[in-house]
Image (cartoon, rainbow, N blue to C red; front, top):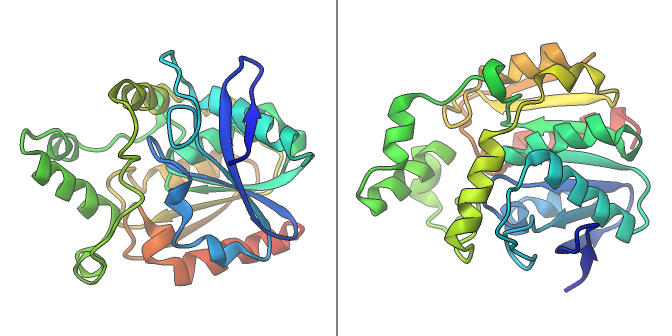
Length: 260
């Protein structure tokens, strides 16, 4: 497995597939690159680049504070290792938070930006309801796991797709790394910096997402100059997988219009 080494000495596992214009795919909190497994082939017309965040998958797992801004710097280390000066970036969930910082702090590295099922965070972001929070921390862990799946996918999808599911966390993560990821995502706040994004931007969200409420999508689209907004009707948090027949062509069309 290839690795990139960050300035602070952390080894990051990364994965490359396909050919064409580079496209970085960034997954959600406490997940490794397998988040993208079911839809990655949709983007085989691009050189798709994924990485395991520090704390996940084959990457190092230092027990120290993580931030979404720091994860964006880690993405740059992978791009440098691959000699990729500029790429499209598609981030979903916490990956969308990372992608925001990538476009803000490293504008020359981002050709076009897609922000999926994500949020600006901070005081301006719309938080999930207390009912949703309680469903995820209930003492019955099997019930909590089921609640998470129902936040990601519709009942119809779950009834016909028994898993395994690669969007509900990297099972091999140490507990401390899970906590570090949770803190990184919860600490995200890009609101003041969002108007500095210069890359063409598409904001995508499932209309029925209450895990990361869909109300965050128009907030991002209004805050980022000239951003486009698309809601996928009936979709929950994992819109990119369950509704891939809609979402992937939507993203690909945008990337083509943005330059390839």
